[in-house]
Image (cartoon, rainbow, N blue to C red; front, side, top):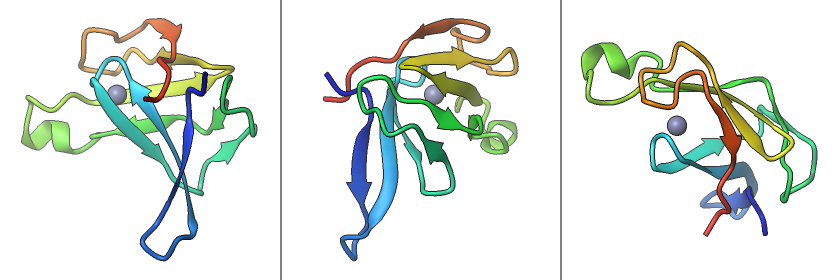
Length: 95
Ligand SMILES: [Zn+2]
């Protein structure tokens, strides 16, 4: 089952991919700046994904989420502020 899903923008142009983040319990968007290995079942994206890198300072309730997505797994780096910091887990399937 796919762990990444291609999305399109309002002009029906390819706009990258979404993955479901098990730490933030929501979708993260990797736009066309990321390189993708083309495998929706075992996705690899480069470079790393940083979500809410700044927002966290303004709103501590919003976690900073920094990860590498490699071969269908998501590696949360130690600078994440959520409970999965430092862990590597299988990406959930995209519903
Ligand atoms: Zn996240």
